[in-house]
Length: 174
Ligand code: S3P
Image 1 (tube, rainbow, N blue to C red):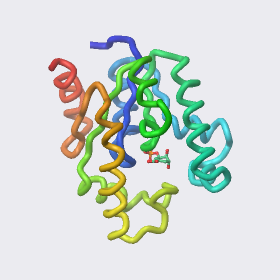
Image 2 (tube, protein in one colour; image 1 turned 90 degrees about the vertical axis):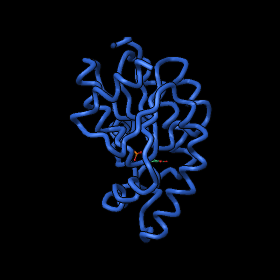
Image 3 (tube, rainbow, N blue to C red; image 1 turned 180 degrees about the vertical axis):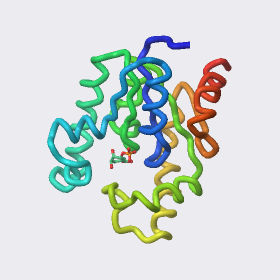
Image 4 (spheres, rainbow, N blue to C red; image 1 turned 180 degrees about the horizontal axis):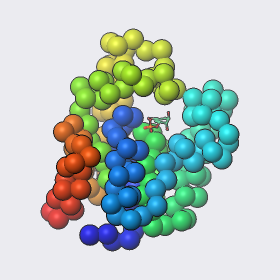
């Protein structure tokens, strides 16, 4: 089951990359790294502050570098940021050095999860409920082109800690 290649979790904000990534790492007995947390630790600031200080362009450059840096410690489970897969050649890079898992989630579910955490996310801050839904729908449509390059897809709308490993093993067995 554990191929001992790194496993990169990709997908929209709120798709559960960090939560399920931690659980998967534990079950697969592999170290876990959250890319946003790695950036926060390295630079001593929260992602919201990094966005403010750098702007998105530099954030994406630093994120790209951090992805390559953490991948150097393979094998491990990596929760990427929601945009990581969609910039530069990051998606091709992850597919080359490891396995990729798209945590696919519906707009409706993303909206209900993100309503309560939007202030921690620079791209969602200050949006009204209607704006949030529209942003998710439009951005997900653009980003799915990248997310769908993942080797595996796990639907998360009905995923929970109890069915995670069965669901993960089922998609790998196909
Ligand atoms: C982003 C997602 C965030 C974080 C940053 C940008 C995005 O990560 O990297 O706010 O572009 O979707 P999460 O997906 O962990 O929220």
